[in-house]
Length: 480
Image (spheres, one colour):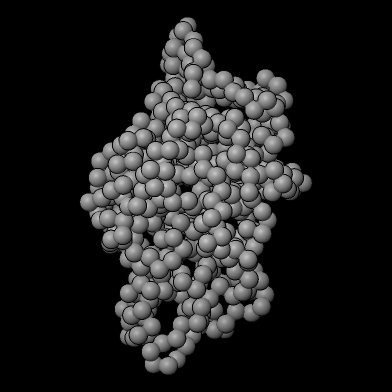
C-alpha cells in the first residue's frame, strides 16, 4: 500500500486536545479535507523524552487512549507510527529483567555490552573520538546488576535510553515482532527513528555504517512489505545520505528544505533553493518544522558555510522570541545540529512570509508533512519553555480544543487551511514537476497531470505568491 499523495499532519497524541479521542474529533471538525495522513508521535508507555523512551510497543499509553482509538483514526487517514530502532527505555521489562538476572536473562542479548563489543573490553580514546556521538562522553551507561556487579552498556542518547542490539538473533526477533505488531494495528508506514545509529561496528563512527546499514534497512522493509506497510528511515545528516537511500527506492525526509527556504526568504535569493529543488529526491516527505528543531547539519554543502552562519544569525536576531541560550545546557539542550524555534516565529511571526513558505513546501517534490504547531501558525511557547527549561519545548505547545477554535479565526490559519485543502485535492500533484526561475528572486513551481495544471509563482523579495490553476485552456487564480 502506498501512502496517499496528500499532506500529512504530525502531532503528539496529546497536543491537539488531551488524547486520541480529542484528536479524532478535532480532525473531523477542522482538518478532514486538509490531511490524508497523520503521523502520531510515540503513543506507547514511555519513561521520558516525550514518548521517545518507549517501554512497551504492545500497548497504547492509557493516558492517550487504546488501540481502538488508534484504529478509529486509521479508518480515515493513513497512519505513520514510530519505532525507535536504536533504543528502548531503561524502565522496559526487558532491561529490568536483564538487570535482575544478568546472564540468566532471556533478554541479555538485546543489549550491547561493552565487554562483548570491544575486543579489549573497553574502547581506546581514539575509538571513542571516532564515534559520532550525541553527548560529550562515551556512549554508554553503567548497568548495576542485582548480584552487585556492574558493567558498561551502550547508550547513544540519554541514560534513559538503552541501545538495542540489532545484530543479535534476539535483537532481530524483537525488531521483527515489533514491526509486525505495528503493521497489524494499522500503520501504513513506520518511521525508523534514529536509524543511522542502529548499526555499531568497532573502529567506525557507528553512524550509517555500510554495508551493514543496508542489510538492516532491507530486512525492516521486507517485514513491513509482507504486511502491506512501508518504511521511512529518519536521519539528520548530510543530504547525500538521503539521496543514497532514495536511490534504493525508499522514501526519505527533506530536512534540507527548512534552512534553504529561510535563507531565500531572509535574503531574497533563490539560487541555493533552486539547486536543491533540481536535484532533491522525488519520493520524500517535505518538512519545515518537526518535534525537534530546524535542521542545520542537513543543509551542509547545499548552503555555503558562510550562508549557513548568516541564516542562523538572522534567525536569532530577527526571529520572534528566539535566543541562542535556548540551545544551551541552561535549557537542557546541547544539540548543535538543530535550532529550536517554530517556523512561524523563525519568520518573525510574519503572516505573508509564512504563507509563502508553506505554498513553496506544498509545491515541492514529495509529500508535505506539517507539524501540528505549524498547522496553526504557532508562535514560540516561552511559557512552556521556561516552566520546563527544555529547549525543544519552545515548539511543543499543548492546544486545548477551545484554543484551537480561537486559532482558526486567524486569517493566516484560515489561508493555510485553504492551501492544505488545495494541495490535498488537486489532481495536478499526481503528475510531473517543473521548475523555472523567471528572475533571481523568483521561482515558478508547476505540476501537470493530463489537462490539470497548478503553478506557483513565488517572489522572495516581496514575500508574495500567486497560484494559477488550469484545466485545458481555462485558467484561474486561486483565491485564499
